[in-house]
Image (tube, rainbow, N blue to C red; front, side, top):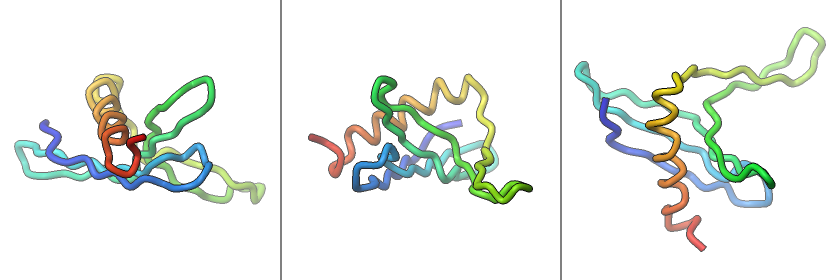
Length: 95
């Protein structure tokens, strides 16, 4: 599986959410896009990639989040550094 495009949308403001990211892959069967990754920055932890998630109300009416895409450690080790690199080199995020 070859990464053919990483699209980064920086998020402005002082939130820990720094960007939303979509990734396109070329596979033997065609192209696939995985949408909704997030670049998050926490003090003391630095930057990390969070998988796509969906917000919903649990049975008690509280807001909860569910991961929408499970990624293996192998895929994370291959993909997440490239997402961080794409975020850090994006024209709107460079210092």
